[in-house]
Structures are given as structure tokens and as C-alpha cells.
Image (cartoon, rainbow, N blue to C red; front, side, top):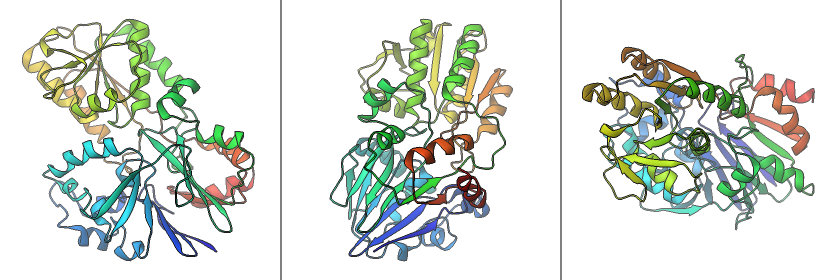
Length: 411
């Protein structure tokens, strides 16, 4: 008999921890960091002293939540879902969306002077990679979803007496068209897959509700790109900030650069490694050599040779140092314009949008904040439920679970 225990994430955004017990099998779906709890106790003045303290304060899952678990499944690698692999107290297999991406970022965490050094796995953790649309040894199928982290999955579990679908975080519409999404993700998206496989009967849908109760006007990817295109037509050069895992958005910006005949420049080592792994549009793509200190197949150029007709892709925090560098060198006569993307709420991951925006103004850079959520909007819940047709709904990753119940009952 299947028992579902939502041990964290029911009334918070982030920190999901779902324990599924099914006869002699126990699985864990996500084990994220509670950034809302972390913000109550830590700042740049006060840092964690170890895993035990973080567990005690509810920032990390308790050790007993992992008892007798056979495997941990991670839907995507935002820290409010990935969590700290070092927190896992015993030998277990951890199924990740991408092993190569995890290995790359794990090196960065290991060398961090901050609490991020607590995240990397311990020696006894066995890592496995999720395979899109393949049912594994634990009867779990990973289904690709669009989100602001690449790659991201929903998890479908075929239990002994019920089928469970956990969405993870996802949006209904992607920055990519259908063909691009399937090429990049090696499979169909969640709603397409469920719609084309009516034999899948979902008993319990564990669904995120990040935007439930939010009053901000929805901005879909296609609308955001039209706005960005207008900005790019008017101003050059452009600095575009993005989450370092948001490859869908990065791909869309590469396509936009190709369409407008702009040179596209990368200044982030992590972004270079990510983009090198995917099929790319026919964009004039280069890296700025002063920031990339490892061999790459991409053409290199110097910060001194940045052309006006260019778009520079950078993580949010990297944009500030880059602009300082431009000012110090006096490279560009005209100030660039910045597009500050906001794919995630600051309470999910400490993105510091306001601080970055303050620096843009301080450095004389006009900026535009583009809020394109990595999560579906409330009005899209009807389409989701009518496609999946679950018998029961369990809200997670939301501050408004009661409202979500009310909305779902009216569909």
C-alpha cells in the first residue's frame, strides 16, 4: 500500500521533501533547502556552523526522514529542490537530472568560502542520471518539463495500488518551440506526454503552486521575447542577465541574436560549459577571454574588442563585476542597456535582483526587469488538471495551499 508523506514544502515555497512508502520500497522526491527558514537565522554576518545546526533550524531535512529509503530523486538542480547531498546520512542512490552539470557545479561549491561548501555529496553517495521517458528499476519515469533550470523533470511513480505524479517546478509554455524543446530535452513535455498516453491514470497529483495567490500580471515567454526584441532594436549593446541553469532562456536569446545579426558574448565559465553541451542556433557566439581561463571550442575575443552590435549573456551577480570592468577600462563609449530577468522568486533562491538593479543605476546603466516565471500561472491550472485528470491533488511549493484546493475543486 502506497503512503505519501509531504514532510516539507506544503506551506512554503521551496524545500520540498516527499517520502513515498510502498510495501518494501521507500523513495524520496526532492530534498531541498528552505531558504525562508535560512533567512530567519543567517545573513552575511552570521553563517551556519554545520549540517546539524541547519537540520535543527529546519533549513535542511531531518536525518530520520531518510530512514530505510532506497533512492532519492531530484527534479532539477535549483537548491530549493536539490538541497545539500552531504545531508544524506547513509548509503543511497541519488538520481539527478544531469551528472555532468552536477559535477561541474560541485567543484565550484567545494571551493566556496561560504556555506555552499556544505552542499557536495559524501563519498558513499551513488549518483545516477535520470533518463527522459524511461521507467527505471524503481518504477519511476522522468518526464521533461519546461523550467528555469536545465534539465528539469516531473516524476511519475507506478506504485502497488496507485500512480503518483509529482510535477516538480514547471511552466506550461517554454521559450522554445515544440521541435526545439524535444531536441534539447530528448523527449516530449509533461502535458504532451500525458495527453498522448491516456492509459496513464494518475491517482495522486503532487503539484507545485508557486504563483497561486500572486497578483502580478502573467508574462509568457513569447510576450517577453517580443518586449526584449523592442529593447534590442532601440539600444546597443545589451547586457542580459539570466540564471546560470536557464538554458531555455539562453537558447532563446541566442536565436534573437541570430535573427538581429548581433554578436553574442559569454563571460561566465559555467555558462560556457552549459551552452557547449547543447545544440545551438547559427549565432555568432564568442567568449570574452579575460573571463574564460580554460580551453573551449568557442571563438575567443577580448573585452577591449566588444562591438556595439552585441548582446552579452551573464549571470546576475557577474553583471556587476563586468560593468565595473567596462567602466574601469573605458571600453564602451555608450553605456550598455541591461535586461534583468527574474525567473524565480527571491525567497526561492537568493537572487538579489534589487541589489543588481541598484548597481545598474549606480553605474549609469538603464535596465529593464523582465519577470518571466519558471512556474505556470494560476489560470493555466485548469488546462493542467483537465489534461492529467488526477483523482486527488496534493499542493506543494506554495504559500496558498488552501486557495489551490478551492481553485482545483471548481475545475
